[in-house]
Image (cartoon, rainbow, N blue to C red; front, side):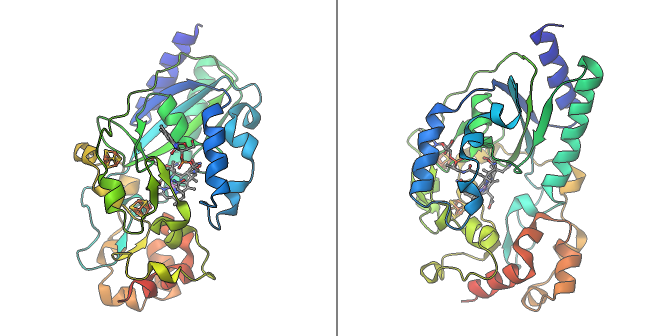
Length: 309
Ligand code: B12
Ligand code: SF4
Ligand code: SF4
């Protein structure tokens, strides 16, 4: 079978399994990104996310991650919810964490994709990743023509905006490659102007160590949130969606149809008073299968205390 026949099989299977977009790029060394990543790390923009210092070479070359890899297949999964807030009165949780943990949901779909490819094409060497490995996921999605990297550093799709997860399959199969699309940010600077903590230090560059998402998710529970951030979180206790909410391209976001991403009744019913007195048991019951568990019970408590005015 030819690369174009293989490509058809991969893209049809991705669509059938419910991936919203699928694009493909040649597995190559990411030369331009090498310098950007180096500067980002040198500027300590990863803060205490020490895992970002590891595997520098692998992060820049998918062939070091999957020997003999030929292609990086990038997949987008929409998580834009029907209702934009869980409750008018509760502290805010980023939209991506409303439902079941996306790592689990997407990994299952990816396994099926790889299985289908093996059934239809034969044995391949391929590995699936979603936020779980040293892969510059946004860069690959952009290289595959699925969108452009906006000034807020998120991947933006012209048809549906930026509320997407990104996953990739790195595979030793020669496929047909897609072309990158243009950048449609133009002269807009809404995300830079709206970021509550000034984390978007210049177009396309987010200082992770200033981002609310970092403080509320990645900064371990035993570290206090920087005092200079007091009063700036605007009720966000897990992640932050401000730079996506203000992005004009998200007018085109459409609600997802993935039942696993629906917020549980327990999450929706949590009252403001209950948030304040949340116990470890309630935390486990309400957030045990959602991405919020990454913050940990103590981490969420710390975040809740930090937003008290
Ligand atoms: C570390 C990390 C974070 C950190 C640091 C953020 C950051 N900007 O890197 C923190 C905790 C702050 C974070 C926050 C969020 N994250 Co995050 N995060 C990651 C992770 C694990 C690694 C990202 C990384 O490599 N950063 C290193 C820097 C150097 O890379 P970069 O920011 O991608 O920058 C590249 C471009 O900006 C580009 N670039 C730089 N300068 C220039 C200049 C020009 C002209 C151009 C064209 C490009 C360009 O080069 C850089 C290197 O390639 C990825 C998963 C993964 N493995 O990729 C998820 C990921 C990027 N995060 C994701 C999400 C959803 C978020 C949040 C929206 C979550 C939330 N609501 O709270 C926020 C968004 C914050 C923001 N505006 O970036 C998604 C992105 C989806 C999308 N549509 O883009 C990912 C891909 C996870 C996933 N699998 O879906 N995240
Ligand atoms: S997620 Fe929030 S804090 Fe982080 S860059 Fe975007 S607006 Fe700023
Ligand atoms: S808000 Fe404007 S500048 Fe920021 S990512 Fe969206 S279009 Fe680009």
